[in-house]
Image (cartoon, rainbow, N blue to C red; front, side, top):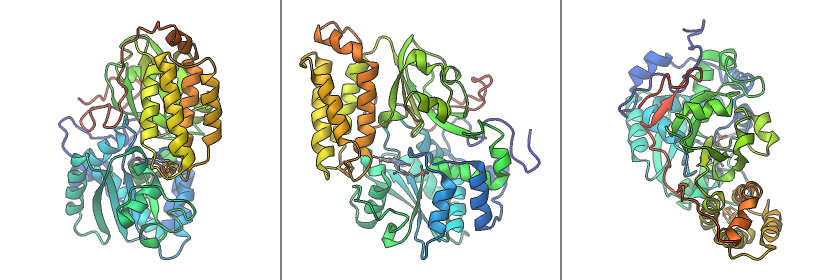
Length: 439
Ligand SMILES: Cc1cc2nc3c(=O)[nH]c(=O)nc-3n(C[C@H](O)[C@H](O)[C@H](O)COP(=O)(O)O)c2cc1C
Ligand code: SF4
């Protein structure tokens, strides 16, 4: 069923029309599903985005309208950069959008470019996402008549290469490392000009807000968290994949959407590796909503949820992740380079059962000391993960010290995607979550 202005009620929204088979949607099919891009004045678009309550989906949760306005207020705006780096190892949503629904993302990027006074769109993608590169390239060719300069560019992998100043640094001189701020990209970014950087999902959502309006957008979700979100669910679930769900959805329904648990759960990691472990009994009582997540000290981040089954060892899995995060440091700030390495070694010792009695307290003290002391938020995200590990798996430390851990490895992904990306399972409606599943 459609609304007066053409938007479909319910879910799926972003993923509408996505079919099995892994082929990118053509421009003609895209227009059949969503209709043409409306001509909307820049200030009207920004107001509509403001009314929709849309926030960035790259992890920082920043209000999109505020960012658009900040860039629009500046002179000689440079490019709009689509940050399709997707460096979170378990995430698959951005690649899904770029590889299968490139026109929705390009619509959003072009609308955003008009709104901020830019004439160039650059889509930056990780070098292994070859399907996304091909799909975006083909989509750009299909839009030959467009007045904007559009290009797609690949960059090296690595957790911090997706951070926005690292993206700009890479575009400017091929160095994929964060820079010290200020200036921020909106002040001095690509080629020294004010630059708008947005996540692909943010732009895809913006393309729908421009078409169907903020009232339509707010038909789903809660007052504080309107609309839908793409969530990558993996771990101990039967059907790991990317799901489009309404904000406000109970976590238990979310797990059901992913086919249900493969075994009883001990914890849920909310928000990927900059996220927070939550004890399973507390996690299933939450909704996919900022206030609920905040009440247990977490946020949705880049939309990754990992279910940890009872047969796995949270301490051991987390020690691997912390070591990975320490290796991902861009090597520029002492507290990040040395602090994260020391923390990783200590958590490794805790998991190996060879740590002294005061090691946990030592790690917590170090974590507090390095927070906020990097040029980018890498150490902050990493210590959030560390602190939740030591909280939620505290009792495992003693079990390990006594050499009594008999868990099986769960193999949390470190680099590469946990979920088969495009063409993986994609669910739409929450009510009857298995409906709308594309295999
Ligand atoms: C270490 C680190 C890695 C990041 N990686 C990504 C990424 O892969 N993709 C992304 O969109 N944002 C990433 N971000 C967030 C970006 O810096 C930026 O906030 C985001 O691209 C802005 O888009 P949004 O407002 O649409 O969310 C990362 C941030 C940090 C600190
Ligand atoms: S905080 Fe770490 S990852 Fe960020 S710039 Fe400094 S060394 Fe690099």
